[in-house]
Image 1 (cartoon, rainbow, N blue to C red):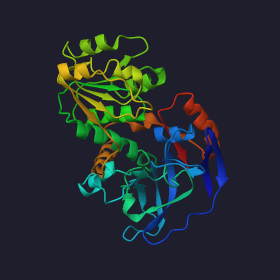
Image 2: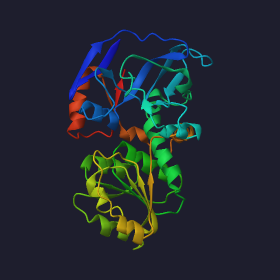
Image 3: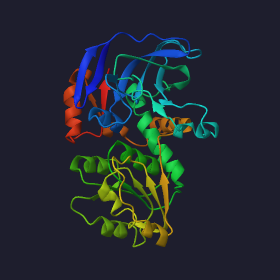
Image 4: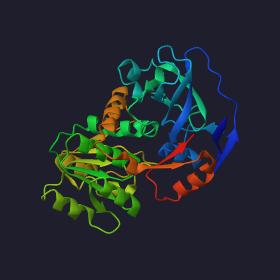
Length: 333
């Protein structure tokens, strides 16, 4: 089967690999689409702490069942809940398996879906409605991150909200906020292409490269500042303004993963009685809500999606590393 293989830092190859052989409790899936995640880019750059070469990446994908599922018939369109939790640590036993002490992921800690076929545990398979395209089905995983971030934040319709970063996760968070009733979502971004997509999706935008972010947010919030600020950019420059754009008793939501620990002004957290919330991946319920959002057609998510052949994978990864004009790249397997 054709596979996209990570071999070493910035070295990707397209190879023929043997078809996965499933055992009891596993399902074989024919992959339709697979997305490139920020985690995949960390692997590609050789900086992911767990991923080991050679590795077939890919944990956000859609496909159809070939064989092995105990209840879903062959041919069923599916996605996969890619978290591999231990099941016996304190978070797992407390109902928070998504923050397992030894959390692993399909496509990071074992081979994933950047191939024509992938095998996964049967209990991770989630059916996709027939009304949803397989292309959008591959976008369920990143959208679930946005759902989880908004649900965990405590956001309520009417709250003033700022989202830093118009990448896939930032735009997913912004889309979820809009779906859940936000009358205005302010998106802060420096990349011109991403700013343009955010505008097409109907968000109020601030160009971080040329505008005074603090002043513009005050202007857009009638001088009050934001109730919530979602850091989806994970860039040190965001932490220099994040606490400033929140009102007293506002909430900072950390969604993006920083490569190095940033400086955080805890004095502002104290003096303004701010709340800081961390977000890690998602729960199964978030996938169900993400499915409803995609089915609703409320947001034109196709504006965020680009498509490529797996044969072009080496060039695609290089272009993504250079910050090309792409929000979410999908390989059509």
